[in-house]
Amino acid sequence: MKKALFLLLLSAASILPASAQWNIGIKGGYTYSTLNTKTRYFYDWNYVGRSGFAIGIPVQYRFFDWLALQAELSYNQKNYRLERSPYYGFYENRTNHYLSVPVFARFSFGGKKVKGFLDAGGYVGGWLASRRQGLEFTQFGINQGAGTGTIYYQYDEAYEFDTRRDDRFEGGLLIGIGIEYKITSLIAVQLEGRYCYSLSDMQKNYMTDQAPRYLNSFLIQAGVAFNLDKKRTRPE
Amino acid sequence: MKNKTFFLLVIIFIASGCRKETPYIIDPRIENITNWTQAFESYWSGMNHNYVFWSIDPTDWDAVYKQYKPKFDALLDSGFTNKEINNYAFEMIKEMSANLIDGHLSVSFTLPDTVYRTQPASARILQREDFHYPGYFPPQWQNAILQMQNQGRLSDFIYRSTEDMGAGTGIIDGNILYFQLTSFMLTKHYQTGDPIDRVITQYHDFIDNYPDLKGVIIDVRNNGGGYLSDLPLVLGKFAEENHTICYNRKKQGLGRLDYTPWFPETLPVLEKKRQLDIPIVALADMHSVSMAEMTTTAILSLPKGCFVGERTWGGHGSLSASNEAFPLYYDGYFKNNVIEAYTTMTMLKDIEGNIYEGVGIPPTIEAPYDAASFSQGIDSQLERAIEYIKTGK
Image (cartoon, rainbow over all chains, first blue to last red; front, top):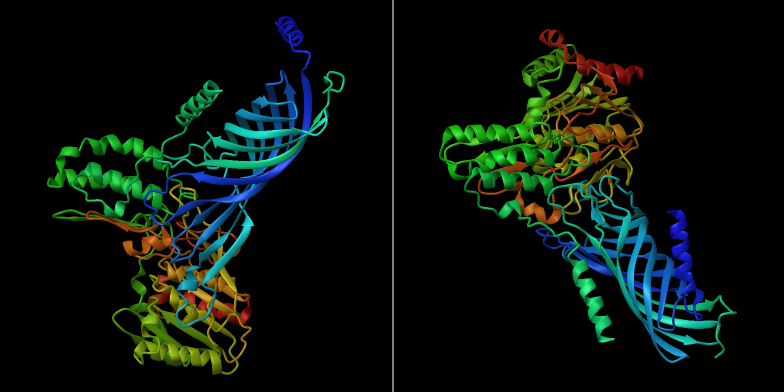
């Protein structure tokens, strides 16, 4: 069985085009994430998007001029905000740290120097940590009567995961669009926009009548890619 | 190119179907209930999304749903007119609520001809090995107090009562300040000039001016709680600003385990004339509930705080018995045309991280109720508190 698999891989490699190339790079940029959930009768609760940042190391294998397979190791901040009515002014900003591995096909088009591209694929990742910062009221603060004390509690603390509820695996689909400019045959700069559509609930299936939560992200990233395969690079 | 774009859109469309849907969840506060099937759904769902203790409650609420839903579905056509069915159905409500740990929980169903009610904690406390009824308050306690006065051990004592509470204060054995109250309604009386206000004024005067005080006993036995705003009137002269007495948290979403962070509760302070570095003892028993327990928790947070007596009731949440409070808290109490779920909005833990909801606060020094002593006019629990202040043991 193993031998057959090895032969299959070998034969697949033998039909790769002569122009196949390995590229590696680095990139980073801006993220804007939104929590997709329903609050039902928690009437004045709104989840709104928040910005963050991302950095990543992409590795690309280019089969043809127009088709490549790319994988990345990427740190993404996927942040959002819970807002109560302005009357009360309570809120919570959540800063979520994710390590993601997007894998996708890149379809390129255009000229030799400047190319456009479209990405389509998926991603998996892990929810590493989270922080919560916000404002709440205290019970003895709003009921202080004749005394004087603290009414509000302003907090900024690490979020403690609850293993019964929090699902720290994430996975989803992604699509992207971008442009690449080749500075030399070995170096190219890229600018891209990407939308990550989560298919994994942030919570385990731990209760009946659960409102699922999906964390979607939009990314704008700039980066540079280096061609590792000098010998196989065709002259410009 | 057009084909590729179309292909991508199709994938996204299919993928969106992979997401879970949010179920239809209705606010139990706005429901109009006409039969037991609806009543069960409303109560179960209301507790599912509003009960604040799911992180520590042993009840498997999903199993409850699976077990009881078919039984209530079978009553769909019965309405509320058949008394026998009503009795049977509410027995099931009682069963499914029996192990909910909220010490305040009281579930009532108001039907056209009957009001059904269950209070799981009241049933639970009867199971305690050391259970006793609170009947010794006030008669036996008053006898013991009178005996102390006759013996010259209790001086400057005043006791006043109104329709909502009683309170008394005096000096025991020359240097121990004693303050007793049957419920926490002080805020209502404070600065009104009424009898309870006079007790408060006297108590504050003792704290500020009585010479050579060696300790304070706050007696909250058989105290059913009341206003949180009473806390500064009782303890506000014993702490500095920003002294943390406990932590609270509320629900923060529809999920059972969605919570705000634990937020520190600080003791609101009153103006004071002197710094007292003396033992402060909470005297509480198994009938000390709610604000009486919160006061005990607050005393235990003080540098020289101590709790003498019996394990308390075990209901430490705060509660506002009105649907109007929902937009502020987003959990706890709910009521509609049939159901009233009197359940708390907050979960409390002490400064050491202990949560005693449904269990009761264990005393630092155990002093069980002693009926024989009381019958002889001796309040053995109060005597134990006095002994602690005198000996430090």
